[in-house]
Image (cartoon, rainbow, N blue to C red; front, side, top):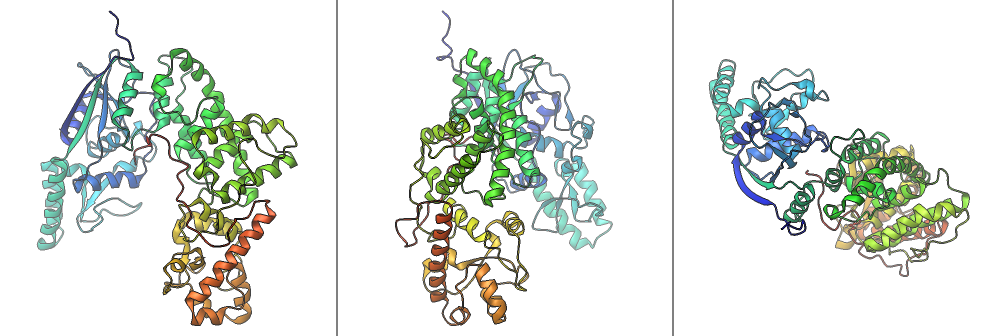
Length: 574
């Protein structure tokens, strides 16, 4: 009797293998990377961090391997390592490709099968060293830097003979006592690497859908394969002339965001925009249960959906620039980007009425915390409305799936950039054209770049000593750090300002006017007055943007928003 696929279960074999054995499997060609998976995308810091974790015996996560017959299409190399034919049952790397490629690229650099031409982009990333004279451990050699005596090439830590040669090199050049100390440190790290063991889980099934379903069940609480990679695997068509790799397209969209200056956007957010244009539920995670007909139809729609999303994101960024939101750190909710993409992917240019409504929607949803409190169904309906109905309505006055009259949340009691409500306040402050200590104004682009580059550290503390703990942690005690060379509290340079200069600088930073004396004698009272001023400035901004003001003028705690979290966390490995 035929087995119902819903009842079929794969053979699952968990085990723990030594790092050396895993590298042997790779060298033999036993491990393979499916062709539908994304390319190697880790940055140099990720590579260094992985080896730092191994040297400290920290866990680096489980590798998931898939044994299938027949084997799906796969690459003939892992990173820069060319793979020979394997006579036995090869194993596909279902999850863990970035980690495995890092280990292979770094530790097998001296192998005859290693060829940097296979990974031409930044071949120097594989050349890392253990610095025995630094607490930082592993690092890359800087351009034009001569090899320091304390550097041990990473492959030597896996090979006793090579480590002995490195030790001899150092002993010939450095004081024996210092050299011995360095060699002992390198030997400790070498022992940690040589004894390191990695957990693996092996699936034996011939059905990709079952493999994905099994993986997602085992890995519900992990941070591993991203949703777009799982979806890409399920919609990839073997031996097709129209091969379409969704994961690679998401890579391209993400790189486009970075190149535009907007900054990196989470892959899950980019995927949701693509799924929106493919007319699929952007919050769905059980992709393995798609029927074959639905998979075929989805596969046909994806290329066009990616194209619409790409155009939509470009126009959405332009619209956000008009609002004064210049980068991802200023954006209150990532899902606002998806919603704007849905509209601009279907309409090249908004009519004046559409633009007016979109402005009001954006700031209302930002100040009211709408996406933070919205359930997936409600958010999906709003995005679909912006995709389908709004582009056709040339003179809209309202939205069907969001109440634009919803009152804003009160001014935040505490400063925390993880809060969308705090980011909305920061958007208001950066538009005031803050001034440098010499009175020179910062353009919005300069102020936004400062926030983008430094994150929370771009907002320095005004007063270090504050009696009231709420005031100490409040937005009133933060100011854009326009004097980074000045260490400590901003109060120090503010009190040194000449009176005429102080008035324009205080105004540009939303500090109470004529309050220099108050700042000098009572930090708490100064911050209390500034808190009232921030509330006043926000309400004036809301009035201009047709946002309903908060029902209370008292500051309140703002939620730490989680609009980017999916029902099951399957984001890309760190």
